Length: 370
Image 1 (spheres, rainbow, N blue to C red):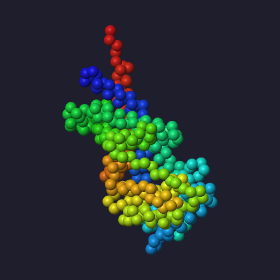
Image 2: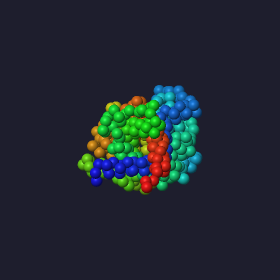
Image 3: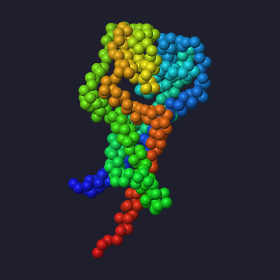
Image 4: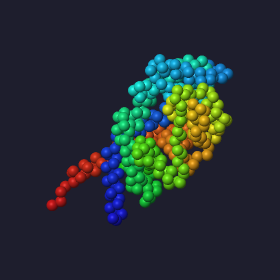
């Protein structure tokens, strides 16, 4: 194939994919823009609802908090799934509860008194609905697969757009918008500039979204294999009949002894899986840290230790999926930029459709040769 044929192939692939998945990509983009700052928005909403706590010298023990939450969960026919300690002394701890229908609930507990301040169902909360639409079109497992495919097609759309970008021939032409030219030219210029600005980010966001939504693709396994990194084996839990778990405080002390300067960010409480303790050590860039300890909650044995400051090559790559998808890798600047990136698919779809419409009109009205 000659260069012109290849360019025509990329052009039709770019246009066809864009028109087919454009609406779904816009949904993912707009909801993603909202989710960039959902933690801050939700924190403001919860402060309005619960107010700010009055800090005391130290919170009550994790065991007491666990007992308070388990008593509340039992009264609602829920089960306690995990505890998220607050990093602010004026904000309550949050806990994840589950019900028989496999819905999740959030409960907030005063870490100084053990009082349950309130609950909400995650799936019907404002952020839960937006997240569900972003992640799976509010369509369950089928929606998850659809959005995973859309994410992969987004990568292809962005790559073909980069190939077609006119700036490869003359750099300044690729970034120039002729605002006073004909509407068709102006529309094309907006499309090419918005597209090249968004391209690399859409490729990264699309690839990571595909890896998360379609685990059958085994992207993580491929990364471990290509980097020759040892893949950690899942920790197995062995128990005796009628064996009771140790108090949570004792287990937390064992975890703290491994990383004494770390802050606990999550406690995963499972009856048939090891206790999971997530921690953030000084020097870890992730907001919640990437260090993790798994313990046998019935014996106190440490089953697995993951040091967030010393990841394998594969773990270091996979650890970047979140930051490049959420836009947190560059702090507040990139988060604000990602809000704009999420809105660009709307501009790209509109300008792309207008270009398609004009081209179609020209073909329809072109006189037949005799």
